[in-house]
Image 1 (cartoon, rainbow, N blue to C red):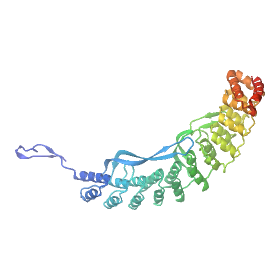
Image 2 (tube, helix red, strand yellow):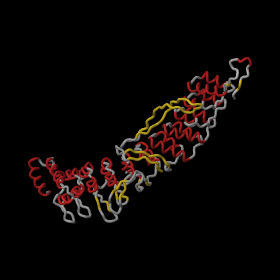
Image 3 (cartoon, one colour):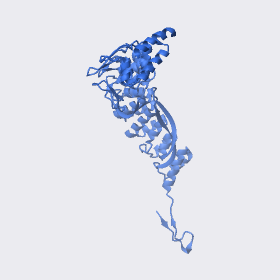
Length: 465
């Protein structure tokens, strides 16, 4: 309220506006500042003032914890916890909970501080959980924390990996099932095994589905998807979480629609789509596409699936080759995958793993298949050998490996074409000759000594040219 002075005699205040002090705002602001600085004496003095509003909201520069998820190509997602400083609205209770000031929290609650007052950074329960203050959370729950305050705090506990706080919140009977599932999936993504174990012991359904943001750097993925805790753990490459979920009997007979690769069942051609747009496939296909470097996740799932299981005529090893993942190919071969298993499309077109690897030009995988003693001269339905496929698609590196391993240059396809003629029709004669000569110069053909290799390589070159 503005007051106009009517002092006589033309004094200093004559005719001037006087703005009275807002006692309530002034003392309430001082309470917030004292709570922020941890000055208990000043805070208690302010609380004793009859004009104070203990739920007064003011802006301060707050330093709080935050999490950042770092994705790695073939290793587990990493949770980095840092502190950031920012200006935000707070109350004295929020600040006391944030700082873990037990005495101040109790005092504020005793004089009517609102435990369910929500601010931009959440409730007082959120602040207590974010900073890991179990004793503060216990007091806030007893003071009547609401369902929204408890549920938001549970998600914060899963976000920061606070298992004991999550257990306390689950025991409050304030958490709805779908919120508990969301907390479980979040903990699985972040690799917080103790939180996952706690939530499961509290009765959260491990087979329930939740919509969550899934991220991966290889293959690139950043999408909201409906998934189970197991899928979230596989995509995030969290080995310990996957093992734990499978150990407690998590269902594996589910399909996942997260892939970036699809396969045309009519032509046998592979094509890349946006991550999350491929047709749903069994969960083990997900472990191949989002392969974890040690291979532990794929090996564990292979205890529940055959390494030669197929979908749309394609087996796991075909999918691993399509994804260009050498590690996944190694694991599958070691676990009994058939290196000669053909892909049979609806049009009768047939490919074997070596044909696919040669067509894409995956040198490392071609070498793995050679080491697995696959048939170097196996044919497609049109009679093409891996060498012919290399010539057709100009895969010099793969052609060199096949030549060194002893693939036969003298074979012809059903149409009467050799690797050389195919290279010529593809205007790749010079590149073809260069790849063959490179294999000869390496001196590694058939494991012979250099003089023997020279005579044999002359014959090979003549047949190839």
